Structures are given as structure tokens and as C-alpha cells.
Image 1 (cartoon, rainbow, N blue to C red):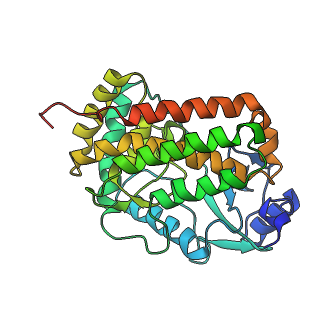
Image 2 (image 1 turned 45 degrees about the vertical axis):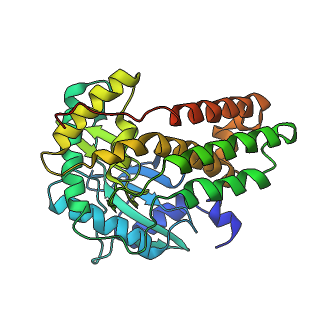
Image 3 (image 1 turned 180 degrees about the vertical axis):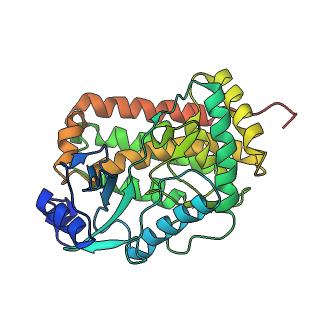
Length: 328
């Protein structure tokens, strides 16, 4: 796949409509782009007034086997009555191709925004995550990666070192802050957990509310510790986060056991996400959508803030981890 395809420059509206037509879908509306930087996702209506979503996967990110594992996991979850957005099969195939692009079609499932400060909603999300993980433990991903320090810290550090986006005058300070953060994570990262298939990116933006949670976007599904799907739901100060986690774990354990040792991974995982996310933006900079949506990345003030954020996260990592009350 060439660089132009990698940055979606060859993915035009006519290309999308032709791809859908090849599957017997007549687009009877415009293509409305949905919020997605990694892939290209559009909502539309067909001739029967059915609302659908088509997702074109970023070339060279996932292999066909890796995408199919995402699709199979989504279908398993649906079969187990876990509310997720799963792709539609055409001639028994969910992974489709057109002009070198992988794509899939999903039903358009509306819903309200999940209210991360609503404890009743958070409790129900915890319950359904217990069910999601119950399914996740039934088998293993073979092609999809596992969350670990190599992909989330070591490789991003190399991206920072070789990137011209990091101001030369700040690069040494920034790399020092990155190295200190990596060292702090490595000191806290432990192996006292079992891995399972995860949603992988379970934050409030990937949960819709329809008389209960609807989990969307399994694009980052990976193998890892269960707490990866829980910690991004937390918000507020430490006392609030402890109360939220106690509620989530109590609801979660109606369906799955939770290993309390994994609480010590919350801040390491947060640090890994900080580093990985920044490297992700740098890696995608040749995609015109990224300079347009992240213009602040080229300013020195941004990198000074990142240095401060990394330094502060090192301090957090040196504090005792979040703990729940003994009843759990």
C-alpha cells in the first residue's frame, strides 16, 4: 500500500459509494463523516431508509487476521447478549475489500452520551464489563497484540527521538522526562495478573447509552489485564476515583472475579497511554487530518506542557496505588 493510500488520499466519496454498491447497498443519502482519526467512518441511509455506518480501516495498521479477530469478538459478545456494535455479514463475510482498502458495514445504533459522573450509569457499565470480560476469557486472540511496555513505551520513545516535531531546543529535556517516566512505570509494572481479550479503549466516548450501555469501536481490542477496561472510566480526585472503582468492581464481580493486584497497574497504564497517544499523533502526521486537528503540536508551549505532564505522572507513580476498602 502506498503512502497516499495510507493517508486516505485515494478514498473519495465515489470510491465509498462504489464499494457499498458492490455489496448490494444503494446509498440514498449523503455520506456523513463520524468522529474518527484512525479510520474513516461514515453514516448513510440506504434505499430502504435503513441507517448504516461504513468503516474503512487505515491501511497497514491491522492485518486481515487481526481485523477478523475484532469482528469475531464482537459477534461473540452479541451472542452472549453484551451490547456492542458488530459488523454486518455480506455473503458470510464481515471484512470487505475495495481498491486495496479493508472496510466493514455496521448498523447505525444511536444513543445518548454516557454520563461519566452518573453513578447509576457507571454501576451498570461495571456490570456489563463483567459480562464482556466473561466472554473475553472464553478464548484468546492469536493475531492481535498484547498491551505491554514495548509497544506503549519503548517504541514511542524511539518515535520521539527521531521526530522533527519535537523542538530541537526542548528535545533533550523532553527525552529525559520520557525516560524518567518509563523508568517509573517499569518499577511499578508487575506480572501478577492474567490476561484476557479486552475492549482495549473503554473510555466514556466509546460508550453510548440506550437504557443501558452500548459499547462501540472495538478497533483497539487487545489482550491485557482486566483493569485496562476499567480505569479510563474514573474521573475526579482520588477519593472520587476510589468510590467509583469500588462501585465498578462490586458490579463487575457479579459476573467476573477482579484481581485487586491490578489496581497497582492503573497509574502505569495511564502513563503508557500518555506516551503512546502522543507517539500515535506523530506517526500519523503525514495524514492531512492530523495537522488540521492537532495544530498545537508544533508549538513549544505544547512540548513544555508535555514535559510537565510527564514529570507530574512520575510523582503520581511514586505514590501508593489506589486501594479499595477491605470488603472487596
